[in-house]
Image (tube, rainbow, N blue to C red; front, side):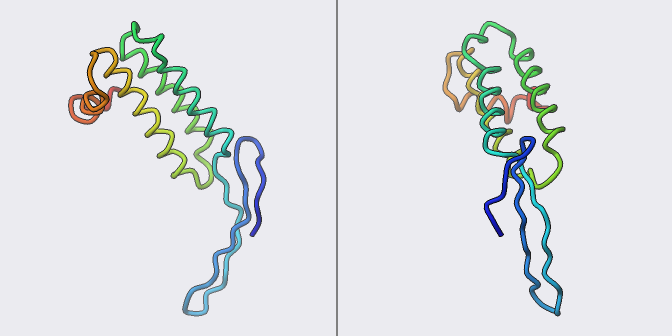
Length: 125
């Protein structure tokens, strides 16, 4: 119904769902999800926590810091319609952790993904 607005890290937009069948009424509600700026900040923070300068740290320490950040970020943005944004941020964080693992072992990115997916029963965290 409009472009919406950003407030407190959320993008708010008024959404109208029309009635489909059986004479149901249309419903209008305020949908909210993390704003683009908040998503960019989360990606930047994940990139900072998994930077190459941290390759000498144990992977468990890096994963613990990334998990701590993601836990706090998800706790704040859990309200609203944030599932798609969560999937994007989690995928970005997994990619960064896979890159760290691959660089530590001087192997390909696929090796990092295989460690995350198959060799770690709890996804390293």
